[in-house]
Image (tube, rainbow, N blue to C red):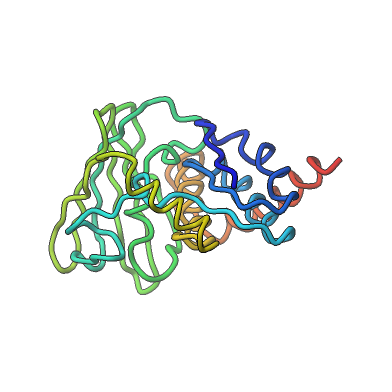
Length: 233
């Protein structure tokens, strides 16, 4: 059993490859990688070696009572998600260090189709996602902040997204993974969350133009194959 706890996700791919090739189960703490391409590469390597890897649940593994987690679903279709950033040093995609982004992006059925960075300043991030059928969800993040907090507004009402209250839920999730071999978060969900974050950064680079999730995924798959080939040399 291996736990990869490097706080910076950028070296995770290179660090985890020997573990995966040895066939060892590994838990990779947030962030799983410093980029979408590296996240894709990690899962590709795990699949090719038939190894098992797991990443934390949103917000460091917590499912808050009455919150927006899949166990509760009290707000249903999330339309607006307001959050507070707990840190400013953000290597890689800006939102990669924001666990609440995971709650905002993937607590509803279906993949987000396009992402638009509406605003990006030292104090505020506003990202708009569009889903099939025209449904729009808005992620608003303010920083700097102390701890993690947020609010989700949905079609069935509003709910607080709980604060960080310790590592106990995360430890339970880690033990469950090593005992059962099953990750609480599907690979597809993790990749789509990273694709949302990458699309938000790409939209910013393009001056706020809408960016499709599929376009960043296609680019990341090519980059992932190249990265793995380089590391195999």
